[in-house]
Length: 238
Image (cartoon, rainbow, N blue to C red; front, top):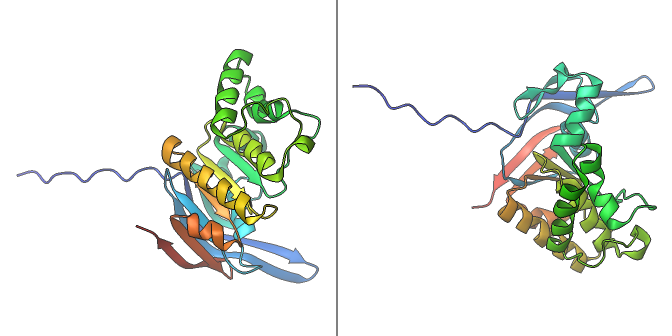
């Protein structure tokens, strides 16, 4: 009698294996990451936390192809980043990774609509399609009627929503959010996290946060705590 085959393991969005990152400060070597292993599956809502110097920002930069590891492997959707050219990494960041920064990083001379469509424009998506995608997204994010406002005409929470629209407009594999609530009051932070939680549930957007904020950790369904550049705790809420 034949033995039934087990279902194949789903392809990880991100997989880090034995990742180290060593910086030099004068004659001193600093080990920012020390053999980090981490797997992020599709649809996760995951927070990376840890004390200052634990390596969480370095980990986010390496996952986002903004930095390279000293050793170990980093894969995005099964593709080894170390095998890619600088141009390929640039296209990977544009097409498969969304970024949300604590300082919003919106272009001040562009409107909310223009900021949100910027990645789609770089990808060469036709204007009518860009408009349909962005207008629906802004409405879903509670920004209907604000598409012509520039960043200085929006609150901090509204600016962060525009940043989220820009991050997810191109349907990336993962959204990396570096301290997304750092510049927001508690009510705006709560609203923002509820919003991202809905995007995760309704659209299947995979979110990975780097954070000090207990509120972000409370909303995350999986929390990974780093200490000295490696995983100290990895817990999932059921």
